Length: 110
Length: 118
Image (cartoon, each protein chain N blue to C red):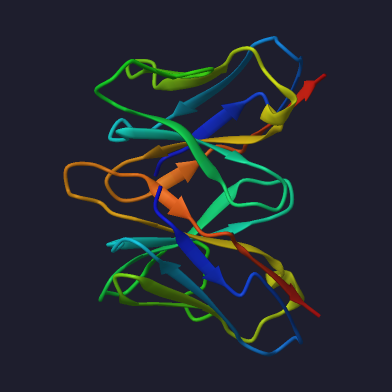
């Protein structure tokens, strides 16, 4: 089955700096890669997603890149703000189910 | 985005009792609902996938007789934790989505249910 690895597990940046979180997946059939933000005790919220026919997608301060050949995808957050502090999960989905990475706890220091 | 509700949000029960958790998609019809379990500071672990009108598909290591899933309609799925024990204490999250056959689509998560078994 699919195996999703996520790095780093924790990330601390200064406000205004950029943050990058990387994930790799194993199943070549995976075709949809969402990123979720989860605040403590809350549900995961979709922040951006990318499909396998696209290499890059951007939404304001957030961007995601996908390298299908290497089977890895990354989340980029620019101009980080304290409210970006949360746990971020990557996921990979084929037509049947979705597997999550282990999560990255991002802390943005003011 | 689409709205998924989950009820109850929090439940405390005695060991040996059964607990039912409901997951509803409020403004769309979900062909597929997923049940996840999340331990503190850990990722979401897929427990089972349920399609409306058919039996749920359980992940390896998840006891189907322990975690009963019913997906009676396109807007409602239930998870029943039978004969709950303290080790079943966890945060259970459902999600709802639709798979058009052309590829996977977004899942929308419920707010989660925190189960504590005494």
